[in-house]
Image (cartoon, rainbow, N blue to C red; front, side, top):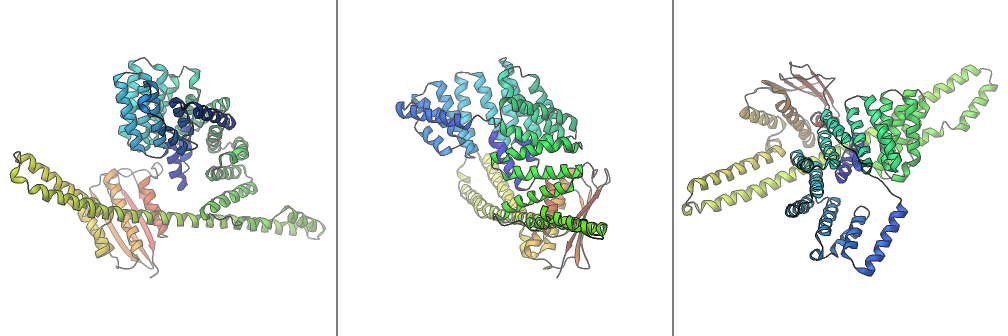
Length: 594
């Protein structure tokens, strides 16, 4: 679970999806003193140098996994597995699987753990068997293979119930809750977290109790039940403080402050966030700074202290720009700040005091300051939006390049290989006795070839490169007609070459995503697509008569986000309207200066 949440944070933070922070509650950074840890490792190292004990090597390997994987691997390599008794043979496999997860070799880690399950089947140790199922479930959860993860978590629960291991049950309910959380089924997630809390009856499980409360708070936050979220965040915070888990205290404080801001309790949120600023340097994470500043901006804006809000906005943008450009240049905000130093204000007030038109002068000074603050805000906002667009553009172009690479590998590699296999097998047709089975096998190879071609075509449609955007869209619509009973209407008035190839790819992906969303969610009987020229713009209109949705309740999921991202790169405008039962209409305006 630890490595799963680490990678999730990295992906979501990359795109500023702050929902990554709630998931950090399960990271379990329960820290001991660094000095004590170092002393322990030194003592173990000295002991191993004297005894060459394989047990000491395994313990050292486990100690080094997080801080220095290479050292961990070194000590595992020193262990002769054949000389180990069963208990330490199991510990060796657990340490090896943890190290493989740290290196993101998840399939290898699963292989080690499944072999451990096989060993345990011969000499049952039910607690270890259940825990091993939990570990495998956590890996599959990280790999987004929900079905596999669920089966292992449920097996862990069955083992614990069958053998009356009630003290272990909260671990499984925690895993099940995280599956539902990952799937955005927060009501079910809360139900599992509650079961976990109810079944905790040991003082040795306080860290798990804290995390169950933390994740319940996050689920309630998603459901907009902030009173319940605050209650559980406060419970988690108190436990973290009792056990001295400093990073977990920091993270739960962030979410507690966020929930208080949603409740308009700005005066309670501000001191929590400013305390976090005092300790944030301990964690060496610019993402932590970035979010803390963002929350402070929201809190001070809500409290009406716009000078403080602008101060933290400057810090937030400075941090983001510094990271994005990887250059420690002076922030644009600093230049603006020079015009409103304390000294400057004092001089202005002194002159105004002795001036004959005191009221008028002060009014002008205040007006100038307000204008400067607004200009500063707009400059910061413009700079960050520019960096965001550049980052988004690089990401989308990288995605298209990867599509091309994978499509080529599928077509030229696997496609050719399957065709070659079929031709070779055909030579043996007269020599095989089970002719019907042989024929079925050849048909399956044919189906595989067709599927490879279909996937390759979907990733990089040849018609787009050869015939242009309009023909590629028509080809896409023909495929929908051929595979469904949906009535398709099109009215495409596009002048080929109006946009360069990279922009045409983006427009094609937008249409493709709109169609995919309709097929997946709307169950329409009729779809219409039109492209028309209006002054200097092209207008893309997409309609379906499907289920529709309430705009106020719809989640801005990956489909709509993907469309909006591409429209942003095209510098266009994206709007949509929908009513339940009456379908949906999407309007996209794309500027053209040709």
